[in-house]
Image: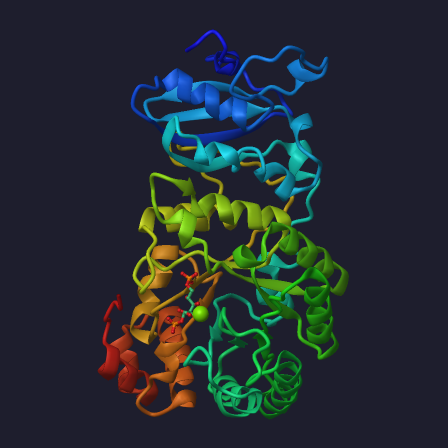
Length: 434
Ligand code: CAP
Ligand code: MG
């Protein structure tokens, strides 16, 4: 390390984090010619108060704000950040440091922010989900999960009228709890947001009257700016829906905090779609883990978040999905040094995991076995509307597969007395789409 560099001041192996420190677990790969300690110094320095060179003058406050790399095991290190470094109750204010410039440093070839342990005083600054796991009972009046959802497919193309009266009506009549907008359906000319909300509310009222069941929709309020976002949430609320959906990564953390505050005001639940996450979660050597993204979303306060299926069409390892599921549901698990840190949630409600992507009735028992619970949301889009007997039959087949699981009956056996399930199994069996 050259005399003019300052990084070594930010490595203090054996330092014991203070009560209010935030601890980040990183996996790092130094570029050639850079020693591990030099890499760790850069990570801690550039994500807290440092820069590349020594400085002529330093503020008095500085010693209280320096982060220290204090633990290292091969390519893994932990960095402790003083709580005072960050603006209170602001995930954007937090991420600008540990998820900021350090990911672009030449001296570090790959860097992954795996997990963060937030101390009590920090967690207390957030409200978390308004409903979370309680949505099953409080909104759907169900003793246990899953909450079922179907996305009209093809993703786009239906008019607001067709979306509501053709697809949503059949899906709800078939026994599904929610009709979910696709992640790229917002306010297109052929399916205007306001008209979709209006028509869905009318069809919902009709089906609730016909069936006596609670019917909900995850209507996508993702908007070009926060003022429009607020307006769209208000429209959904005024039409009597208890949920709205937000593309949380695309919208950004400030939008999620805004939406969560509004959801608490309106006593609504947020269905969080994670489209765009794979740009930075998928490569295990760089970016941020899905587990950490889910932790941030629970802290801010979304009620349910897509976290993967392990057997559907989208990537996500079984181990990471199980770890994320355990974390969002607060299935207390000990820290596993290389893959996750402990987290005391201090009363923040558990968040519901969402399994979606390439699912069909033949796969649902496997999903519940992987999740080891049915307290979750399952979304089956193509796997409902691709049913040979039509949309309503596809919805019934999903419901029947869940019934079979609850009764601990083999799907094929249950299919013998439930034609819609039998036809779904004939078409898809237990195929795992890629
Ligand atoms: C699933 C889906 C969801 C994905 C998102 C889609 O449709 O609507 O957006 O599940 O991925 O557009 O692919 P299908 P993830 O049910 O027809 O596959 O849940 O992994 O975030
Ligand atoms: Mg989708």
